[in-house]
Image (cartoon, rainbow, N blue to C red; front, top):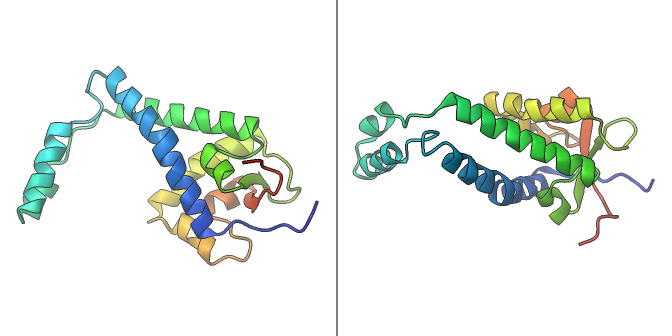
Length: 165
């Protein structure tokens, strides 16, 4: 293996943004329609936006849109499952990671991650998010560019010179 180049914060951010737009958003739309509109109360959300724009932030924050936890869980499971399928199929890359030529690998061997690492990393995203995004921000400050989810799963994100465009 050639010299390892760790993928930093911004390239990972771009990959994540692309995955959000091209994977999570379409999945969310499908889940919303499968729920018959019960997953998320868009009418309340629109009212909150109007209240906030008219200067009434207290009203906007006091009336949070109703969300159905069952559909939240279904959405989470579908996104995790599809991400793991991509990681397995494309050797540690989702479409966003593939687009910017990076991939997730085992931190010690630099080989493909296993299913346990994939699941741990997926749930590690939740931990990284709940910790005020510190789990993601730490990527910018570590020499090996590992986030909290990487540390929990024993993974690292590196550049993949072998990924074809």
